[in-house]
Amino acid sequence: MSQHPETRAIRIQTPRTAQKEHATPLFLTSSFVYDKAEDMAAAFEDDNLDVNIYSRFSNPTVDEFIAKIASLEGAEDGVATGTGMAAVFSTFMTFLSAGDHILSASAVFGSTHSILTKYLPKWGITSDYFDMNKPESIEALIKPHTKMLYLETPSNPGLDIIDIEYVAGICKQKGILLVVDNCFATPAVQQPLALGADLVIHSATKFIDGQGRVLGGVVVGRKELIYPLYLFIRNTGPSMSPFNAWVLTKSLETLHLRMEKHASNALALAKHFQNHPQLSWVKYPYLDTHPQHAVAVKQMSNGGGIVTFEIKGGVEKGRTFLNSLKMLSMTNNLGDSRSIASHPASTTHSKLSEAERAAVGITPGLIRISVGLEHVSDIIADIEQALEVCK
Ligand SMILES: *Cc1c(COP(=O)(O)O)cnc(C)c1O
Image (cartoon, rainbow, N blue to C red):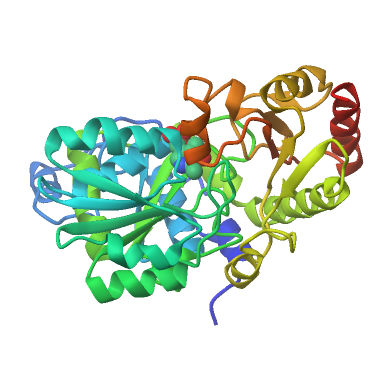
């Protein structure tokens, strides 16, 4: 019988050295040596993936991180990259060619938008967007040359949720690759491959690290899809640093514990502020007022660690709210043990017009809280006092 995910996140390991160290060894080495010229020749033979050659190709510390995350996502194999965006870009470059079309959810990460609109067109790859809240509109948007469907669920920062199994059904029927950015949920909460996705992408920078220390990315899926992706990364170089992999493989040991606590804190916070007079609405996947609550409960084991709300008084009150916080950090990262508040309309998305912001689900007073692991009463108290200032 296979072990539980919590156990695999701790016990999966690459072979230890002759020192028999208990913890994961950190192989900070750019290359690996050979005893004989014949061994070196064999290492360079095609398809010899068993021998480490150079850390741009593979590295035992990075391999341990990949083995763990692939196991947690129920994937055959994976690749690791220096950042989440390197994972997204490498996936596009490996599977799309000139003339291909990608259908993407409109509510995707800002830099993913930039790749779709500013860079892919330079290579003759076009894209269209679909609305996460209208899954029934997807089929009509698929073109004969559509190769890939791309989405994030829950989305950032709108927390829109889509039924992965339903979208996977359409993709299977049309022969399109379904790629899911699982960054907000993590494999501790949602496993898109089991619901029919072909590839899962993560920014490991967020909940996977969980402590705001390093950047990283990962893609997992079937061996036949991972192999060309591995070759792309090996040849073009967006590989993960062994040091970052060493941090991240240790992080995975506490992922399930952390996600349970992030989620219970987030649910308590969402419920506490649900009817607050200063807020027009509060959004959280596991609140029954979330428009896709039924889908969230079906495909996620908890609601995750992000809560959003709309503060009455728009952009100005949003800024006042941030300035009034005493404990929560003001930063654009998320998925940290420290609770974080951000106000996209006055910061990350301030250069867009109000209409452009509305199109990606960002309202003027939208506050995104990445609920951390502090005592929930302290997080609530800080938000409460900042809302008092906004009166
Ligand atoms: C942060 C993020 C990314 C990009 O990851 P980096 O590690 O910052 O490159 C991609 N998708 C989502 C949903 C994210 O939150």
